[in-house]
Image 1: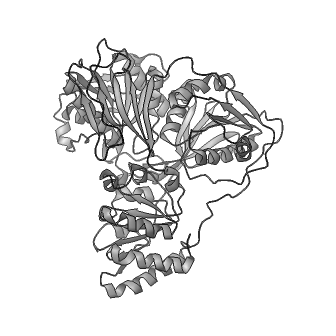
Image 2: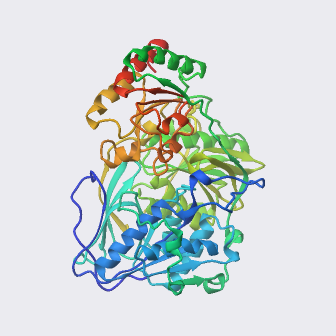
Image 3: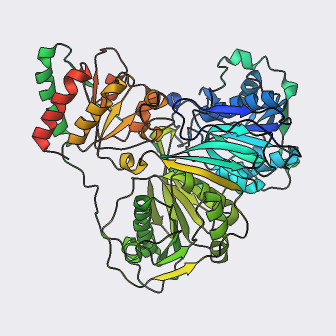
Length: 632
C-alpha cells in the first residue's frame, strides 16, 4: 500500500462524543480513493447447532454478512462516491462465501475479490489476516481498508489489527466518525472519533490506513433476498487462489491455534409468568417472585471480592514467563490478570512479568502477582506498546502473554501475535495450564458455544474478558525486579487529539445485580430507576436502542453488538426480550422480567415474569428484596 500524492477530505466533527449516529465525510479537493472493504460470511445465531463431531453444522444454515462488515461496505461506498473513487469488497472463504461479495456489489461496491481454495481451510485469525494482507498486497495499492469492528460470531476483533500490522499501516479501531481532509498536511489526512469501551478518542493519521467500523458509524448496507444476489454479474468478482499469493503456508498449516472440545450451552429458563396488570394482584405476584429468588439463591450475595490468595511461584523460575499486558488507567483488569498469571506461573515453574507504563505502588503489584515489571514509560497507545515490548519478548519468548479483552488489549495482543508468530485466543473466559500448555475457554455466538482453544506456537496468547476472573487476596510482597524499556525510536503514526471517559466498563462487568432497561422506559425516569437500583447495589445496563438514543453510554449496552455479562440477578424492564439483547445476558443466574405485554418475547427468556407496568411493580419488588436480603 502506498500513500497517494494528494491529500483528502472534509471537516473534523465538533469536540465531545456524538449524541446520535456517526458520520462519514470527504471534502472538496479530495483525490479519488481506492478503498477495500473486508467482509465475512457468518451463520445466523438463532440457527446455529453442532453436529455429532462437535463442529458447526453449515448445511441448511442461513448465512449472511457480518453485521459490522455491513457498516464497512456502506462507509466505503459513501467515501468512494464522495471522492470519485472505487470500493472493492474482499472476503476469504469457500465458494459459497461469494454471496457477501454479491450483496456488497448490490449495495454499491464496484467489484469483489474472493480469496478461496481448499488451501485456506481451517484458517484461524492469524492465518486469515495473513491471507487477506497478501491479497491486499497483490492487488494494491489501496488508500483505505475498512473492516467490521469484529465478527459477531467469534467477537475476537483480532483480524483488523493483524492486517494493519502485516501491512505496516495505522489502525483506527471502532470508528464512529471519519473525515478525509483534502486541505490537511500530508501526514494528517484522516481524522476520526473512536468508540473504545467506555472512552472516546479523537485521532488523526495519514493514509494508507486500516479502519474498523463501530456499529453507529453509518446505517448498514443490506440486501436480504438471495434471488437478488444471483443477479450480480459474476465477472465483477475475481477469484484469488493460494497460487496467486505465494508459497504460504496457508490455512490450517499457518494457524497456530487449535480447537479442542466444543459444547453448546443451552440456557433453560423457568419461564413462569404472573399476571399482575390489575394493581390488586401486584402484592401476591411479588410474593411469588420473592419465593423464586429465594429458591434459586438469587438473594445470596455472591462473593465478588478476594477469594484465594495470589500464588507465589517456587523453584528457579526457568519454566517460562507469563506476561501480563497492563492497560493504562485500568487497575482492576490488570489485577485480575496478574492473579491468573501467578497461578499459571506456579503450575509451570515460571514467573509473572507485567508490562506497564506507570507504577504507582510497587508493593501492590507484587502482592497482585508481579515478579518483575517491564516499564514502557511514556508509551501508551496500543500500536506503540506492541512495538516497544516486541523486541524483549522476541529475544526471550515467554510461555504465555495475557491481555485485557478491551479495544486496547485486543490491538496490542493482535499486533504482538503477528510479531511473535504466536497463537492468540480472543475474549477468553477461563484459563488453565494443562500438560504444560495453555488452554483457554473461548465463547462464540454470543455465548451459545464454548470451545477449548490451545496454541501450537512457542508463545501462547489470550485476551481475557473483564470480570470473569476472580480478584485474589494479595500475597505477601517479595523479591522484585524492574527494567525500563527503551522509548519509541519514531514519532507516533496516530496522533491523539483528545480522550474522554464517560463511564467505567468494569462496573458492569463485575456487577452481581443488574437492572436491564429497554426503550419502553421513559428517559426522564432513569434517575428514579438508578436510585432504586442503588438500593440493591445494582448496575444499569441497556438495549442498543437505549444507547442509540443517547440515554445511556454505549459502555452499558448488552447484547450481540454490546457486552456479555453474568450477574447473579437481572431485573429487565421496558424491554420486549429480543434475542439481540438477551443473548448478552445468557450467563445471568436468575432473570426477572416486567412488561405489560402478555405476548412479548420476554417471557420465554425469564425465570419469572410480571405482566405489569414497571412503574407499578419495580419499587415494591425492590422493597421486598431489600427487606428479605438487605442491601447488597
